[in-house]
Image 1 (cartoon, helix red, strand yellow):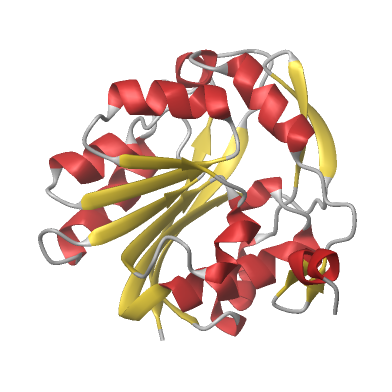
Image 2 (tube, one colour):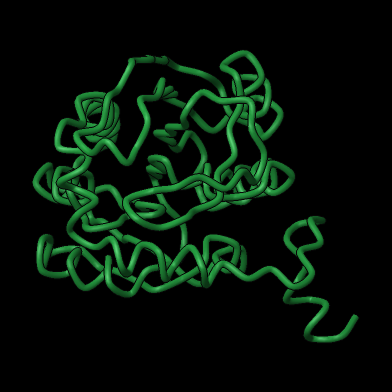
Length: 225
């Protein structure tokens, strides 16, 4: 297998020509407006609070799609955990470093973490980040996160409930592509990836911006089986 072919391999998922630069550029342009459009994040705060309390003090936590670092990276750092955030958007990471100076942030595609470059983790948060992947990639991403977790590690996952796959939507003056599941299918996908469902929550959410439609947010508290 050539180096290029190896780079495209994602634990069995072939991703020829994968280019998420458009997603990164969209979030670079959105910047701080993201937090303005989503000012109330009760579900996300609650899920991160579960993770922060369930982990031993000083645990190592990966924040996937950390965005501006608010609220999750800051919440976990304030709880005494060592936070490592990754995001595709350099603009978002610039804000995250300002908002949470005590955390470590890296510009990276989620798929590139499969080589273990950032080490092992006690916990992972993936709030609305996996929905940016095509459906065919999501199970592979979940199995990869499972592999990054230490035995008994925890994953706080959120998705928008929607039966869509790589669907283009307008988002704060930009276009992004999203995927989703109905809740029963999402439970099945995470279990097949090796996780136990320790708890779940759902809520209706209406963003402050009229450019973003209302949505049903699903939060799963998961444990590596």
